[in-house]
Amino acid sequence: MTTPSPTSTSSATASCTSVAPQGPYGYIPVEACNANWAYSPSFPAAVAVSTIFGVLTVAHIALAILFRKGFCWVIIMGAGWELVSFITRALGAHRQDIQAYAYTANIFFLLAPLWINAYIYMTAGRLIWTYHHQKKVWFCKAASIGKYFVWLDIFSFLVQGAGGSMLSPGNSAKTMELGKNIYMGGIGIQEFFILLFLSIVVKFMMDVQKTRHAGTGYFSERWQLVTYSIFASLVLITIRIIFRIVEFSAGTDISNPLPTHEGYAYGLDAVPMILAVGILAVLHSGLALQGPESEFPSRKERKLEKKRRKAEKKALKSMGKMSTNDRQEHQGIKEHDSTAVELNRV
Image (tube, rainbow, N blue to C red; front, side):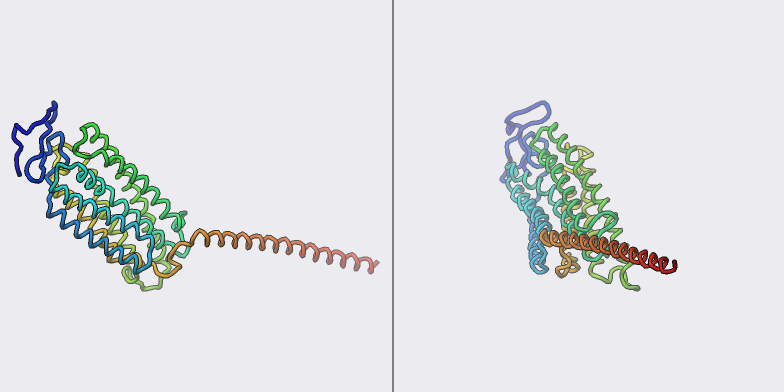
């Protein structure tokens, strides 16, 4: 790697120096004011991970078509965002002086797991709808679980997006500190939602296990395998969240090895996400969610069902009134007969 010479300095401040790009790849030292990367990104590593996420994206597209699961577009987006992140990282490795590559790689890398999270929420809601006899866990209806947690995920997404957009190495220290705090708040919120969601999935599994046939093992049915894939994926996402919290809590300057050494980002973020997306492909939701009963009713079907229940309730109410009138009429006849008997006796 070429070391910048003193003559490469174009401007200076009290805290750092702006340095002209060096070498064929536009290398700028991380301590420079105009640095776009916190390290010199590895081109071979970025290409390798891009290839893996490319294969996983294609696999999820094929599986969504095979099992006819429209909601799988969410996991496709997650894998696709990871793919975009590492493609731009590979491009940035050979053009480190272009800020757009660094910014795009960073923001897509930070936010892609939220799509994976949302897909897990949506899968669990459909599992509860299909396999739970009450179609709900505690007070949470199956059709609402995915919706509520996805909206919470979107909230976390917006918070993390706002913070992540400020974490480009080219920004000022004050901006990066604010971005770090906002992003950490966002991933903290995300982890809280994950733990809350895990309690619901555990309760679902316990409830359904009780209603299945005696002697059924914990890994003998497809719904169980898909549920365990949810657990495994959430554990991997949690590992990634813990890494990010530790990384940013220690600061973003060059004294902190986590943000300034690319290997940590690969080992504790990229690899867990590869495993999570891979597990969700091997144990795809379509294995357990089969047939029309595995999908939530459409809005039109829900309206028709609501009208039907309303009509049934009205009919029962009318029958109740008729029964009351019949009883009153019958009581009146009995009283009339009793009166007639008394008069005959007299």
